[in-house]
Structure formats: structure tokens, C-alpha cells
Length: 322
Image (cartoon, rainbow, N blue to C red; front, side, top):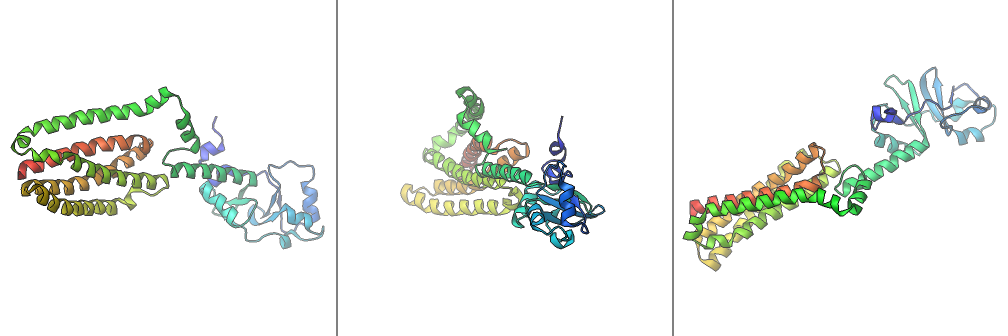
């Protein structure tokens, strides 16, 4: 059976309890203390001060115990305590309580009606859960740090199950790359120098894609959406490709003395680098949307696609130029 937290999600309402002391502003400290005696509350660290059902303030038990019996509650309470709506995210709610140095946090609806109080023990639980989740996100894995600890200590069989399928995809990609190279045997026969630069074009595209992928996965892990980095990252990939092409062309021309091959390599570097950036952004985003850990599968899959595209782009350009 699902509990309230399961039904409401990680919201303030999921942690709020109505089983807390409730007094009025006109009550005295002595009356409030007598009202607490013999009753069992989920938490009595904070008293909710209400006018009928509307919250008008909060009073800590410490201040109540220090007051004179005849002191009026309205004079003792905090008339402007931090409050949140029922649907507010639990992390935001917990931090609001911490920032106002409150041992509890009142939850009220849009009309000001008192819904309940998030007691200190639940605030602490929320903060611990969110801290664990933030560490997990910064580490680039999902759910919690517990999943990372499990992955680090799991048996060899489970390690193979998690990693081998993606490496098999990589093996298929390597075989397909060989097929692509074989399809351009005529170009290689005409100019064997073309083959010299295949590893370089593939490596540069992979390196740029890896940088983009790391940036995107790190961003997704801390809640930065792909839309916020897409345009700038694509532009960065284009500029990197242009810079590397501009550097490669004169070096190849000077060392090997073949302008056609130099143009082919430069154009391939520019095109492959630009496309690698797009691939490296798309795959982590897709894995994230599917609820899968992008750190596991997007890397091997992106490498396969980038290698195939880089080889294909290079040989298409080389065929047209050389």
C-alpha cells in the first residue's frame, strides 16, 4: 500500500502533520501548557497559532516554557513565520525552514488555511535525502549514492551484464567501419595517403564528442536542461572544427605536399567535429528522457555513431576531392 508520500510525491504536503499543538492568539501561556499535558502529538516542538482554521503565527516550545503563565500567545508568537503551499517541492520547503532558523515549517493552502506542520525530524530526513541525491547527480549517476555504491561492489556477473551489451554495440560499429572503409577501396588505391589520416579524423571527432557528452551529462545531473546548452554547444563544435581544420591544412600541405588530401582532411575535420557535438548532446538527452543512466550507455553508443559518421564523412569528401 502506498503511503502519503508515495501519493503526493516529494512535496511539503507529503511531510506535513496535522497532529501538532494548535492554540489561539488569545490563549495564555499557562492555558497552552495545560492543553499539552496528557496529549500525544507527532511533534510538539512548534505550536500552530490559528484563528479558526487560518494560521496567524507559530510559537516554539522553548519560548512557551520561558513565558509567564499569564502571557498572551499572540504576544509570544512569530506573526510572520515562513510558510509554504502544499505542492511546494520538499527540498525547497526544507531549505526555507533552515534559512529562517525555524524548527518546523507551516504548510497552508491558498486561502491561508492551516494544513499541517512539517516537524523537525522530517525536515532532517528531507535534507539528508536531498543531500544524497545531489551527490548522486554530481557523480553522474541516478537515484542515490546507494546505487553507485552497489555498482562499485557488485559481482563480476552483474558487471558484465551492465557493460558487455554496450561493448558489443561498439564491436558491431567497428565491423561496420571496416565495411565503410572497404567500400572506398578505389580511393585508397588512387591515393594511399588518404588512409594515413583516418585515425586522426576519428580521434578528433571522438574527443570533441566526449567533451560535449561530459558537459551535457554533468548538466543533466544537476538539473540543467539540454535546451540551455544546445545552441552554444553546437556553435562551439562548429568553431572547434573550423579552428582544427585551419591548423591541419597548412601542416598537411607542408609535410606531405598534397593539397587535395589537405583539403579533404580539413573539410572532414570541420564536418565531423560539428556533427559529433550534435550526436554527443542527443544521446545523453535521449537516455535521460527514457529514465536510463546516461553515464552507462550514451558514451559507448556515441563513440560508435561518431566513428561511423567520421569515417563516412571523410571518405565521401576524399572521394569528391582527391
